[in-house]
Amino acid sequence: MHVYTNPAGSGHSHGPGHTGGPGNSRATFESAHAGPDEARYEQAVAQFLSRYATSREHSSQELWAALDAACDALATSGAASEPQAKLLRDCVSRDIAQLASVLVRGDRREANAIARLAQQRGPLRLLVEALRLSGDAIYRLAGESGRVELRRAGEVTCAGTLSCPQCGATHRSTQSLLVMPCAGCGAAEHVKALQV
Ligand SMILES: [Zn+2]
Image 1 (cartoon, rainbow, N blue to C red):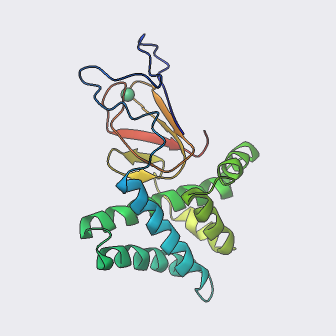
Image 2 (cartoon, protein in one colour):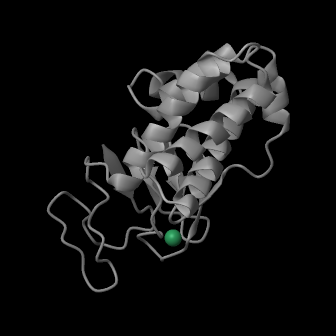
Image 3 (cartoon, rainbow, N blue to C red):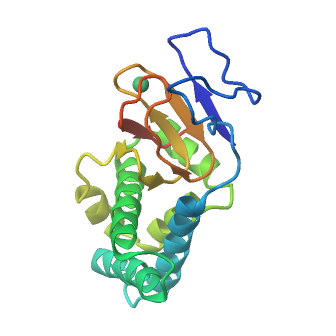
């Protein structure tokens, strides 16, 4: 379920019956139906986990190799184009790095938020499972993350909350979602938090 909140209080209703006005043609914030982008992301994560689970040492190198192989396989099978596979690799690696970073450096509240999200079936649960398999490699994975909290329109990401740094609008989703331009101001970049 997706929930869109505009703390600026523009007076518009974004309830289920909202059809959107000029400049707000995407009335999909409440949609529970995942599109092809989310489906490809979920395929990539599932293939990544099955490959990583059978790796010898569950090292961080093996983790990234499993992700590369999963995305390559999607391109080879025709399930994704080459550019889509490359983008998927970036999207999944950002989510892995952010999850690792929060699980290692985050506080109890953040860890609990991830545990709650991981109760639902979906990519976030599979990524948490991969990080559990990684053992001590999670520290290396967390260290490899840069500014992983930023997500751009056109990317797909696992469950969590996207906040617009420009206008403060937030978009919460308990499922993976295609990142859209901000419904409040059209900004492309969002800050991702692993809680809803
Ligand atoms: Zn905005």
